Image (cartoon, rainbow, N blue to C red):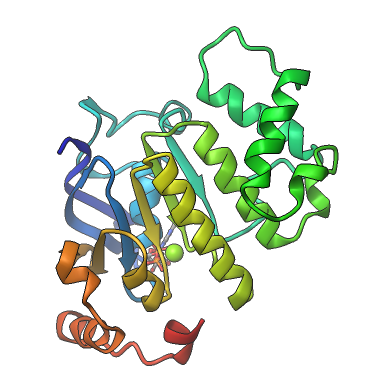
Length: 267
Ligand SMILES: Nc1ncnc2c1ncn2[C@@H]1O[C@H](COP(=O)(O)OP(=O)(O)O)[C@@H](O)[C@H]1O
Ligand SMILES: [Mg+2]
């Protein structure tokens, strides 16, 4: 198995040298293998989003090294990294261009995934393709190509964002609590769709979630962040047979905190 992403001894401190100094990532190391679908859990403020921001280049690591497919990207600007890294956020408005239509959004995503020379516009021959891929979402969006994205529900937007991410053929897909703003039923729908798209396109994926059931159910590997480090890393059969109580116990053992909120389990 090939390593897609490698973090070595990554540190990140916010507001260094001030009274608010916050050493969030404390020598975090992680190797992500090709085809890994990793769920990430950890308490509030554990540094989960910071980890993703450092990988995506939104934040620069203070120390350590980040390698993506044999390229050292530690200091690479976010724009350059975004060609290889797609992100989906909790805020359903962030992944799509609101004022543009569904087909225009898909055209932009297609262009991102392909080489130069392709014009931005929506080509007639692409419409059939858009309809085909939208149909697979099973949300009726294939009949709404010219609908402006602002009229879509949160769940429909996240589904479209995931589809767009897959069209861009990223080396790495980062999901930061991408179902947390959705109602439970819609969240389930988007999770099922996530799995389908990740599997179909063999996307190497890191997914932050608050939902421990989802963390266990989806993906081949689960990591837990605590105090800026990876404290649990479980994969394969061991992960598959994990239960929520076991995971909560593990969390307690490693962090000294309890994950008691019902929403963590039921949401
Ligand atoms: N840009 C920033 N500037 C200052 N502090 C930040 C910034 N981003 C995150 N933090 C702080 O770093 C800690 C970890 O945040 P975050 O990575 O968002 O946690 P979470 O695990 O909940 O996603 C928190 O205490 C947060 O307030
Ligand atoms: Mg976060």
